[in-house]
Image 1: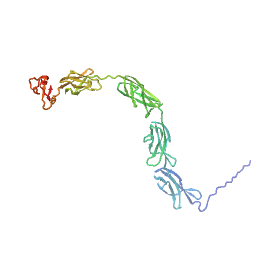
Image 2: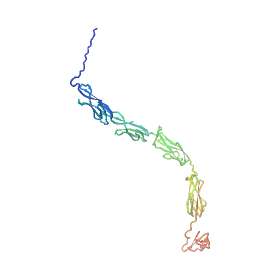
Image 3: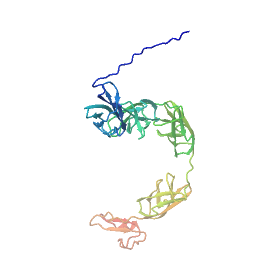
Image 4: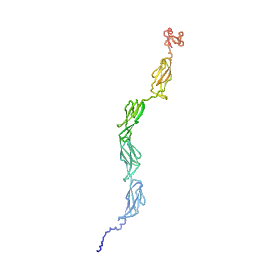
Length: 413
């Protein structure tokens, strides 16, 4: 078989020729656009392109509208917010190329979570982050404030005891950017009430303080809830609005604390109190002197064995001689005639005494005579042979009656 020869004709792309085909026509900067943070660096490069579209090396001079750039194209961003133009120039050909530096800057503060529902007294951790114009999320320093509760420096919020809609705010430290989150605080119903102590024993007249604790269905303590108190028998013990129990008479009573329809109870036993016995009785004044017909008030003080004053004890009074002085049930002594008497105060078998002296009243200044009548005196120590003067009185009234004249008077001592 005879060999065959295949000839293929190819059309080559035309090569541009001409007087300007190799002349530098454009300077290209790479990258043409970049986003940088303050003080961040970026290496820029530049190359030439001919009119024919060929890429060629080019020696350029670098410059930037802000920030700094080295002769080799290493750019360092400044702290300003404005965008920057980086320029590569070939002065001999009067050509230049540019690159753009977009400054990354914080444009938004976001609080997370954006909304939350909490029960009274519950806690929630909030956080805040920043977002730049490039969409990047970054950490940011913020100052937290809140309504309807308390919040810490690091964003831990604790709800208060009042239901309602509140807010948590985060503001950029040193800046104006801010964001907020909605907090809904709900009331948790009381599920149980516990009274402490659950049982108590007190004497009549004594007191004991009870407390009530309210809890939700999960056993969490609820504060600030209204409590009402009541007793099953107020003749045995009374209960105040704050849960203070006072023993009245011996017996047992159930004390109930109620909140939002839930109740808790405690049992209180009241026992009769045993009074401290009287160990001594003191009467004051211990000595007194009165005239016949006059009075003096005595007082009795009862004390226990330790010398402590006892009040409310029954005192009985007595006189050793009621013909000299009498004493009332309250210790009021009245002089009857001249003499001495012992007044006794008694309580629970213990006695105290006071000595009272009753003196005869002084003679009156005159005896009823009218001028120029004479005043005659009669005394048991006198003598009818005497002249009847105060110093030498008669012995009998009859003798005085025998000698008196109209206008005279007689004083019997």
